[in-house]
Length: 446
Image 1 (cartoon, helix red, strand yellow):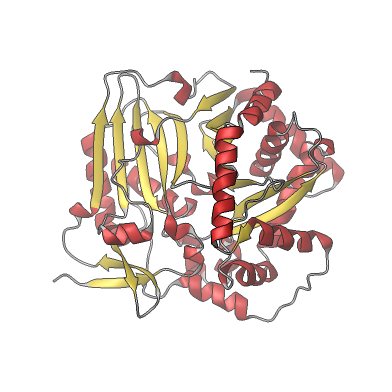
Image 2: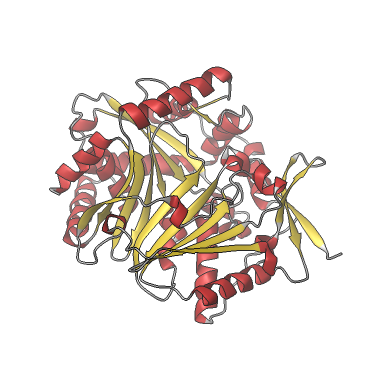
């Protein structure tokens, strides 16, 4: 029997993430399928964590990955293919000459085999491989999908897989991420939680962040489950929400970034990132027809690696972590893009303080309040900046014409908008009300 080691997941890894998996989808002109499969097998052979199997540890009371330390692991890759004689619909990919476009999301079945599990419990029950690749060839384009459990990977972790595949396809060397039986995220997280509190929650901005966090995530109960289901149906059926994406490139992107960053700099409000600008633009554009909206809860996921890595450098390459932020954007119609971008940057900065991690632990981890807080009149938008994962650095031998993302299952009663780099531009995707997609289209003049 081959030697194995058990890698425990942290409580932070399991704040609802253990119940789903996610798929990154690429649309490319062509791909060498046998070479891709061989490269993926080499990746899991070197990065043995990917060859592991999900197990529940009664002793540790947590999900773990049983990692084989020796032997052939080629069967621990799920690699599937399909083919269609038809062309892939032009609504699913970006014309390389476009400076702005609204795209429709293609069916996930082009990128993910239906037999791939979702939750860690289903991965464990079926003894399923952690890494799955699915390729669908059309007459004009090829779809490539990479699926992993969300309880084990976030955008940064998935990006490590993508770049390791790229290196193997190119014949380049790459650094294999390390792993150990001791979960560094759990250790680092508990270290901060146990440290003395130096911040007093006195300022209004921080207090509002915590209040909105409590409202956005609640304890699982029958009442909350029913409310979530009703709101999901309301958004999908009554509001006719659609999974689409907006691509911004060329002069449209350049002018937007220059104007907003210039306004922030001239006002002395500090610095904002491109993702801050894109977040503010999407939020304001999608609500452009709703001038009477009093406020919108702007949610987000922010990496806290930088803070944790100050004492635990290995956190820089840990395969998953994130913290949630929720900030109320009042009087959205009257705020400029620069003001919203500054607000978003300010909220992210606060999440990277030890005080917020302590409060986040009290609100979400200790109380297990990870269920979406759905209620009429509370209309949050969750933004997740996946640029940090550098998904666009994949190389399948031909230009990437679209980049898509799915979480399975997805039953959130409010939109989750992902931000990714694509070529010289950015693509923002989410399941958003049809009226709001129409508003974005009007803002762009499409």
